[in-house]
Figure 1 (cartoon, rainbow, N blue to C red):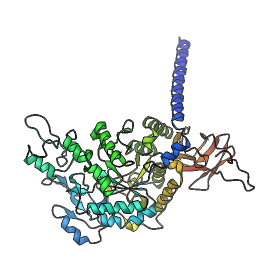
Figure 2 (figure 1 turned 180 degrees about the vertical axis):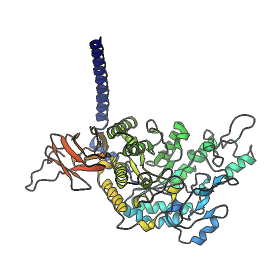
Figure 3 (figure 1 turned 120 degrees about the vertical axis):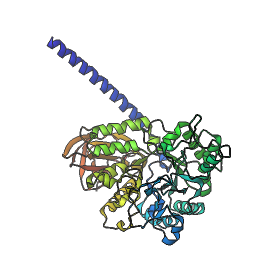
Figure 4 (figure 1 turned 90 degrees about the vertical axis):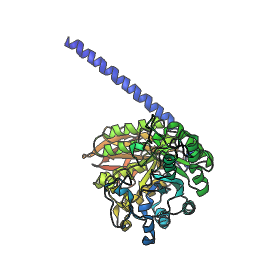
Length: 535
């Protein structure tokens, strides 16, 4: 009987092993088919600024101090509070009358003028896109409770100043993206107040309400200060995105912005997102629509051009924390790219920290973990979104601690974190494969390993990360048939080199080390080249 059971178990193990292998081979074959492009297709990717752009996120109130602090105080009368630039935000008490938390109505006075004065810093840093958190007239500092989308908050400036900012960015070869909060407005909005006072007036059915005799307005996440818009109402659709003078289209055409990041986009749903995105593309071809969607990225494209890739972020953080094995993390990224498509993932914003999360330096106090997370953010497919000040080493926990004013005192040539980020940005901008190349997972039992490639072997990049406490010595299959035997791979951040033998490289990766490898394809001193006819 034991022999029969043993034979049965062996049969079942063999059967399931073969099934898993067949499934993996099917996925691998699908991946191989989807990551083969012609030169013209890669050129088309390269010419689309939305693919792999380096995005820099700014809270206008916190980025650059105003030139005249006293002149700003008139905008911040009680219960609002004007803070000193040296002060840090902290959790406040709930204000029953204003229906907001105390820290939501504390201000540091930054505006569009002071931001424009710092464009030289962004130019030197090397970013491609400036993304501004909401700038519309509103009650709070975060401005996710807009009063009127057609008005820039007077404390920030005017639409004319916004247009000037866009023009200056364009003159530097950069783009400008605004934050569109189109799921809800603020309780103090004149539109909402009128709908309450005049239920049969102009703004009738402009906001969502519960059904029944005692109907009341619905707040986003039941927050009383954030009444939800009724986006099924044609008047709302006209106001937000469908007419030429709508919010979405007017800022694209009149002020010359280049795109929208949509707050809580998942709440808008596929149909409304598709209509809004189409309206933006029709109004300004090549404009960008990014959705704040914390879900798995599959299916959201082309309803939006890209999501904020929080799923990809979570894989990175859990792997570095030791909660997901590196090879499983690589499998997850491969599956996500396959399910979502490269046209989507290249435009998706890969976030590591932002205004809704703790800063990277607080998530991972250890330098190795910070560097590994940031290198992966800048080498995996997508558009890395860098949160202001994180490149300087700013720290901060959950809201509102991560929204501290910019630490301009940390902009120093001896700031190692700053230097590291500038070098990383420079590498990213100089390597086409990192900006718009395909993604291939590399087989490894102990490393997070992948390749980014175009049709040119001279652009192939291989990334391997070892988040463990042990050194890893492992053969890695170099999945690029153009990498010639005997070629040497060189790490872009050190002097380490590894020879390629018959399409394999034996890598020695130190504990908690990440390598960014590129093939040395230069000619031999005597003129011989392995890459004369294979390039």
